[in-house]
Image 1 (cartoon, rainbow, N blue to C red):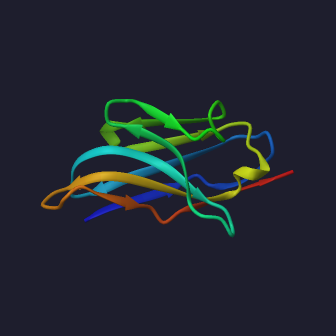
Image 2: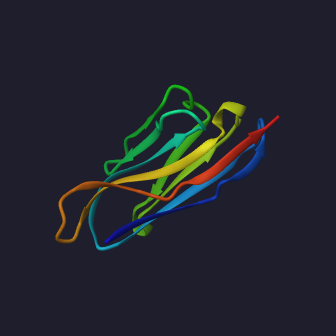
Image 3: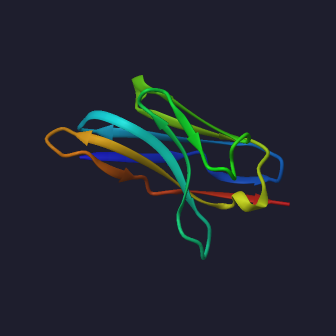
Length: 120
């Protein structure tokens, strides 16, 4: 079984920074990529950023230049550094991992989500 656990959400004022972390644990054979999605109230879940196993990063246009995704392969951990936060960044942030589990096919796993609230 593979689990993703996020941490680091909270309350910040516009212009401030927050850092999210996500740890993948369990019977992991290989991680293809890890990333972040978010869902604001009343909206669909949207992709934010991805870090591939070859180190390539990709960002949604709405966060490019403000958010940075990074990882620690030794710890199966991915981070999302969020700078210059805006009110529109308020959402529940979900960690996603495309992972081969031991004895299991490659599939997407999700964390439980962590709330990020940006106030003016």
